[in-house]
Image 1 (cartoon, helix red, strand yellow):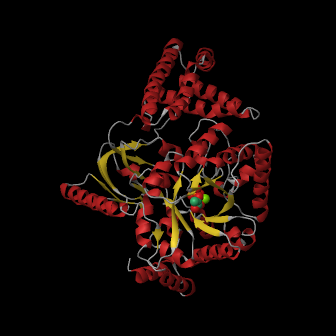
Image 2 (tube, rainbow, N blue to C red; image 1 turned 180 degrees about the vertical axis):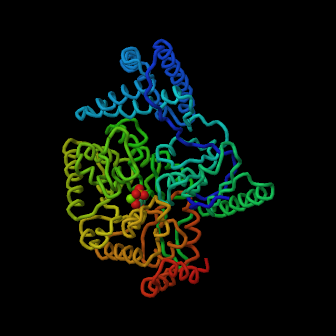
Image 3 (cartoon, rainbow, N blue to C red; image 1 turned 45 degrees about the vertical axis):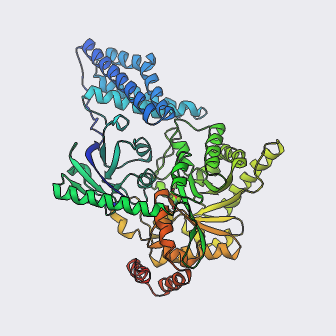
Length: 571
Ligand SMILES: C=C(OP(=O)(O)O)C(=O)O
Ligand SMILES: [Mg+2]
């Protein structure tokens, strides 16, 4: 049995599919049989073409035409005589092995593309060249690249780590669960697993070392346990647990069309976090009363190039229409940290989570930011839109971002474009410095949305995705509770509201404390909404206020707070 961090509820059982990058290292060799080497190259290129054709077909039918198009770009490179021809010529002229020449030519192409700073389209091609090179190299070396898009039977994915874009490629029909070596509960792959309703365990440290391809694996996403090669007794036990979980879910489903009210009648909002317009269905199916966070960066990440204003407009419009008048808070692009865009090369940084990211990029690359704001403003007419800025640290940043928003709004109105009268403009509260001056920020922002995923990592100086320091990732630590309380109080003093869209908003231990602090909106993975709504119906706000006061004044540690909550709620 492997122990990891429970990242997405549910129980799954299937064969292991190892999503592990093979070793693509090689050494430079002189060759004498030039024709033989060119033939080896051509074989590898045509095997890569065949593979890409197959992947494209499957991706188009299982994931959609848009996701499949990235593979067209790859095929185009392989059909380009300049690329393949240059490798052939290199082999003939230099009489060295195909691997080395492929590497040299590819590096040249990548560097040339990346240098075209005035042509973002060509810059984006660099990532395609890298991908294609990997594929041809694997054929030259006779190793197999994992192709998650080709999976056509039920599997549990076992991987060192899953990037958000790997996760986006997983087909829900076949991927029953996943287990990774790295990651924490709030890494983006875990968040995506929850939105896809795939049971997941992260941070096991050794899953890829201990689990072999095709071994049977049980994933218990509720406890964080992964069982490898289970015996019949284990299979029976977990099948029963899966049935019990399904029954519990059916109970929660009854609350789908109910409002969120506490035992003493206080009305609250339970909302969903989404990443794409398609997720709106999951949100409404799970009874979301709003979307408290639309991570718009996923629109950028799921695209092979910078999405245009019209493409973004269409996506926001579709999401707004899907929510039928219920509010959607769209967060402007939050790239950086663990979220990358292949077509927007960012500088290598020692500390990317403390570096050039989110609003810092938007204020610098105003071309990208203004395009996004125009798309949002144009879409605002089709529903109930709010906008927020990620990673605001200072009053000046908020004012700058808001001024750019106001300019774009004024321009559109002047041009006669219909724009909604009222769009709330708020900010993520996820940097401790901002939380400390929440009273100042509350004068300018229409609302706050507390991002505990980052707020905790920055407060505790503990990387949210690093399992080695996950013991410091303490949502209930009195330090965090004080920051959260401070933010909520500051917003209320200015007549504004505060939501929470970090994972803590859907955490049954945190929710009683948040109720006690008067948090207005709770935004979480859609699959957690009904569980939390059911919990809230059993809680009394006055009791929870007493609990919170005690936690804030008496508790010294994370564990003491957990004990207090359990004693108060008998959860
Ligand atoms: C909701 C948050 O944003 P993200 O997880 O996308 O960083 C957060 O930081 O809590
Ligand atoms: Mg964040």
